[in-house]
Each structure stands twice: as C-alpha cells, then as structure tokens.
Length: 400
Image 1 (cartoon, rainbow, N blue to C red):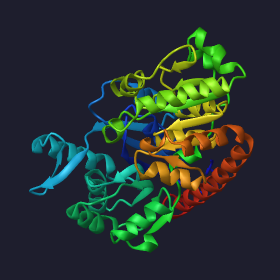
Image 2: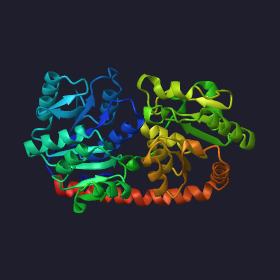
Image 3: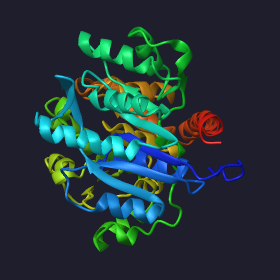
Image 4: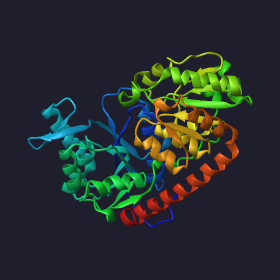
C-alpha cells in the first residue's frame, strides 16, 4: 500500500503496544505490516522492543525493511502502585526510569499507534500506560488491529473503561472484539473494524527455499505429494491440553490415506520453545520438523503450496488464508475460532480432534481444496479492502 500521493510534511510516528522482539512470528507479522503501512511515505518511525532478549534479530529485520526507524528497548508494565507503573519484577526505581524513557520517546510525536495483538486483557497495563502518557503529552493515540481476551477482573474493566473512552478511534480485529468492548462499556462510536494488520501482508514471490531447508528436505516440498502443515503453540494456556496422541493419529491417517508429507512449523522461537514442544511428535521421513526461522512474508509464500494447515496459532492461520490455503483452527482461545468463523471454516478443541466429525471435515477440506481456496481468497480480499480503507482514514485524519 502506498500513500505518497497525499500532500504532507514528514511525520513522526510511534509504533507501540505489541512486544516486538519476542521472537514470535505473529508479533513479527504485525510489526512488518505496520512498517509497510505507516512507513510507506518514509516518515520517521519509532518502535519499542522488549529488553530481556539479547539477540539482534529485531534490529536486523527492521533495518532491512526500512532505514528511517528508531528502535529502543524497554519493559512491559504491571498495575500502578502508589501512582507508579511497576515492571514485571516489581522494581519501582527501574520502572520509574523506564517510564521516563517511554515519555521521552513519545514526546513530540505526531501519532502513537498502539497495536496490534491481544493487548486488551485482564492485565492491560501496557496499553493503559501508553494511553496515559499520550494524553499527558497531548500526542494523538489510536488502537489499531486490536484483539481482546475475556476479562473477568473488575478493576481491569474499570481501568479500561476510563482509559479507552478517552480515545477517538479504536480499530479492532473483528466484530467479536467490538462486541466485547461494548460489553465493558466502551462507547460504540469509537470502535471500528480494520481486521488484523497481518491481513495486509503479501507473499514473498522471490522466496528461495534453499535458504530454509537442508538438501534432503527440499525434494519433499517441491514434489507433487499432498502437503499438510501443523503448528502447535507451546504457550502455557494450551500446552497441557495439546493431545499428542490425537495429533500423531491424524498424521498417520493423512500419510496412509493421502500419502501426505507433513511439515511441523514452529512460530515461537524464544528458547526454541515451539520446536522442542513439537519434537514430541513422531518425526520420520514423512514428517519434517522445520528448525529455521521464517520471516512473515516468506512463510506466507511457503504455505501457498500446501493443501491444508492445522494450527493453534492465529497468525499461521492468517498466513495460510492470505494465499488461499485452507486451515483448520485448533482452538486455544476465542481468537482462533473467531477467525475461522470470519473465513466460514470450522475449528475444533483438542478434545474434539479424535472425533468422527473432525475426520469427516478433514477429508472434506482436502477433497474440496480448490473450491475452498476460492472462497477463502474472496473473504480475504474483502477484509483487506476494509483494512486499506481504515488506513487511508488514519492518514487523512492524523497524518495529512
């Protein structure tokens, strides 16, 4: 998307909210989309990355995409105590200096864009901190592509009501998020649907798979066998519920019935957690565990040759849908089932994937692949059009 036709002088934009640098491919996708979208006119961008990760991936990735971007490290925040926002280790002195660092970086910006990701939760202190700083400094702020978890804590709801109703524009991931915000008392006229920022990403048509695979892994990807991708989240909210016996049975079924080749794709690379988690599955000549890290656009292109994706990771499902590859969401929380519903696809809890209904749907997805692809691409085109309209609205209102 290009917006250079709009008359403007160079703007300064702060991209905050999502924990950039957490070695999570979903967060990388959000960052990539924000850089593409709001860096299209060569405005000055500033992003904050988490400070506990020492690898330089985020710096290298951002610098490769565009030059006019400043990166600085800082922490997330927990509830305020005695008027101070405290970091996760409850260190008020360090928290005070981190808070001041954020204020210095946000000061004099033309716009603070907080998004995307599921930041509206029972622990909403990062987003509340950014709202409060922006209001104190008189810097305009919007939420963009925002997701929302179920919130049960009364105090969190009260903090969110007070903070979010100060905003003019809240762009959310879907109508399900809008309904949740309305339910906690956020004014409806503020809430608009723009879909997940990753929707705007495009596949890397020049992808060279020789950079991703060992030599013995290239032939299975390039041959004509049915290819199935599986991605399982190792995060604590779903780790114990993941039924490896059921997943192994599905893999065996796909190999026996369809002569399928299975690729296991990790999306969280912090301490190789997803890779280690999925290594519990039966790895053999028909099941390949990918160990190298993808960039978002590369993975989107990579998935274009697949017949089906089975995933408990939202952004892997988004990536596959961008190129029309059908997916079955393995439900870890409502954002998985919500996105499946948007694409008119089924999703299943782990305690359902051994059922006859699941296997019937699995066969349906493989055997009706072409018609399902067309349907998915039509829906993605609609969602991307809405997303572009929202971005143009932001440029005209805040960055003209």
